[in-house]
Length: 134
Ligand SMILES: [Zn+2]
Ligand SMILES: [Zn+2]
Image (cartoon, rainbow, N blue to C red; front, side, top):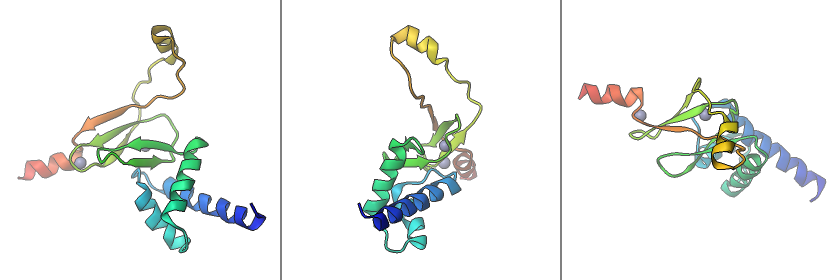
């Protein structure tokens, strides 16, 4: 790849990453694309997808599947679980959930664990308030 193209790739990936890093809303590729376009008008949705896939493979972003069955992205790699609202589909961070001891899991099922995903489902506070008003 010519040097100029590589520099552009790196810059675009940086913008994609920064966009995810800036928000706690666990956005989809479409949302990220809309944001990135403001900074890089010529970028295509395909390029955004490609960059997301590289960032994911490099372990720099996490992927979470929402109720919409779409991939949502999170640049916060600190240990946390997610709460997914079944009404509005929002994905909230949940910190402080006790982690399972992976070593115990290895003894139990004989597998080596590399990652832990924990999703809670239900209705978020905003949706509960909205319902109580009716
Ligand atoms: Zn909700
Ligand atoms: Zn998160």
